[in-house]
Length: 134
Length: 122
Image (cartoon, rainbow over all chains, first blue to last red; front, side, top):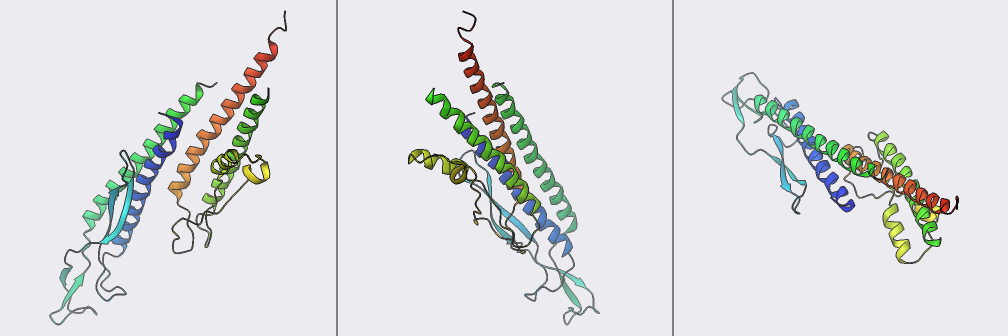
């Protein structure tokens, strides 16, 4: 472990933290909009998630390629009196499944914590090395 | 003698820049929610390497105390480009750097003292 390898190591952990933090952000948006029947574009809210890619070099960090919209079908719910109901009384609800979002939330939090732990342990390792200069 | 004088100069410059960077990062984190705020940085290592390469003098004003606004970050909906995780990462790197500079400086002074105490009791 050389002095020039410190910065890349920290950057890898930070990239993981940023990716999971963004993911958590999107999950919050999904949960908040779980019942949004109409967005600016007209159709119901579409679930969002991050698309992650490895940053290239081995070993490397993670990059968020883009924020993708889930293309699975909307849920049809029978609500005849709803303003957004169609001719047969069905309302198209967002393709957000709360149990799935909760599970993803736990995964993202744990992944974030794991990256923080890496950062912490790595800091301790380098500090022990610098202690040799005492 | 000239060589060791340079070493202490450079290490002190690095220490001072790392101290400055610590407060710049603190300022970035404090302004995380400020509309329109762009993050600041201390590009000491690049400016210093550049100055050494071109043989320019290393002065506190031009090289060490330089604070820039990179303007390279993605701006969010309030015009702010501070990312907490990146700032924490920079904080960790900078703390390690500061500690290393301080320890190296201490070692250099110890060596000088050792050199000075040779022949003292002879």
